Image (tube, helix red, strand yellow):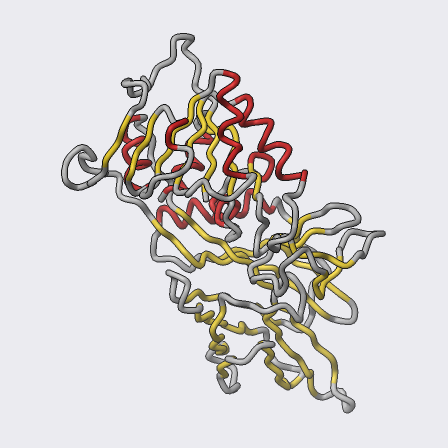
Length: 377
């Protein structure tokens, strides 16, 4: 809930920058712009090219920590350097690329909100103090006491989700749903048999991050065919997910129907993708605006919470006689109740203390929105 509330606060202009000590990548997944986020301790799902600086967000956890080389290379033309993980080990210093903007925004902040952090890990715990010299204020929301409590203008001992829910209600802002969209690719390859009577074809369901990369959100794939086809259905439950068949050359076009069974961690249970097979393989490639396709998919997921919506993002014809299609699939939808309840009664048991005796007003004297920086664990 808090992750998505922060996304809405950023869109509304309240949240200017977010500093995270988490390595779970959820702020990026939620929709916080990368340029407004410092992940001080790295991201378990991100690789970075040490040569050109390109970042790669993966749907699987990177296998190493400590800024070590991984098994993949940069895909930028002319680069090809070995990628590295981004998660710091204990002896690693905080990267300037993350630390410098964090310090700069804290110095400029009107308010630094410290949400769910013990404020004990240096040097990150001292970042909120940078706002005080410029007249900024610190607000701490945490269940336990922290070493920085006496520096706070407002201290709330409580659950972050409940406190933020109250803030959103006060601002009349709706918490947007969390919609997770994952990508996969289907690779269809065909070749004539030696006697030219048959077509040997295969269908592979693979990660967009490479054929050897795992598909963590897929448990299995149930494959069936059009009713007119006398082909046996199959269940693919071992990665790499690969199906091989032989068809008479005179066969009419048909559909391969794939039912994707999602892993237990997904709120959605399954999705269905139809692959048209005609063996003529159109030379037309399909590359539409990826962002608009994904946004349309999110919109449809909001109106139809049944889950499992899909869309084709890209289609590429490769030689020899191979067709690659990239599919976007909704694997998770979480909606948040608009009725937050009265947080001043027993539904939210918390203790708060305002050291200056005044709870900050919603409106500032100059009429502008406060420049807020979030420092969250």
